[in-house]
Image (tube, rainbow, N blue to C red; front, side):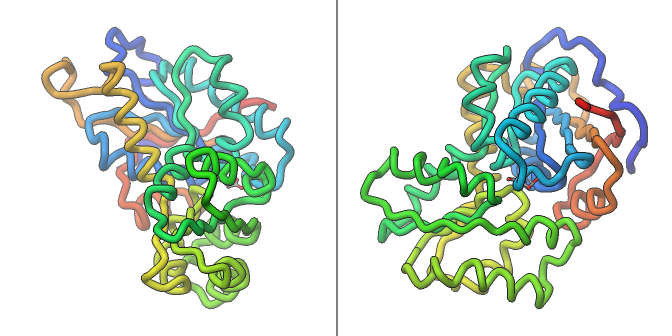
Length: 288
Ligand code: DGL
């Protein structure tokens, strides 16, 4: 059941940081894969998600633009009382997190470092593949993060600009998607990778098809799951997590969604593909 309108608790001042929502954002539907992981790992937390559907995709935009969009959305989430912000977008994580983190008052967690560290733990032959948007791959952020953890690892990467539009269209298990994926993945499979980082939060929606193409011997690293674990660790270290004994309000934790434009694919992905229950969906202009 979805209410179209304002998120019902968004302007209520939180008297307890633990009860404040986790703010999450992405350019569009991709960050919902992170929300799904957060729901599993932190089932008691309220989540306020912003999907910047008016300005999707971020993956082909300049660093300046992605930083500006990320700053505007982060400020909006802080204004709504978020106790922590999850940048559920690899493009924004690669280009904006290190710049924005020192400028804002709440912790900012991206998906990139958790994904890189999970890949380093997973590889046995020290050959890792990374797929992502043009901006993420062009930033070399994954290579840097992986090679900082282990300089002996070889990283093969590929920008996959056609995948986000296919996913936004819901073509997860379509012949066209398989042909395009093969074109992107074959060179890195030929390099003998045993681990592949899905370096875009949209890509977990293609996991089945990607695993079929790569074969069972390649481990897929999903940054969504690893990001959720990093968020749990951070909240626990700050005792800002919501747990039953501390919390006064034992309501079902809300998932409030704000989009910057209407999006046909959004509800389909949230409800059918990821089985998320949305408590409110509203539309709001953020930035110019
Ligand atoms: N989901 C975003 C990411 O993880 C990319 C989608 C886009 O290009 O906007 O990079």
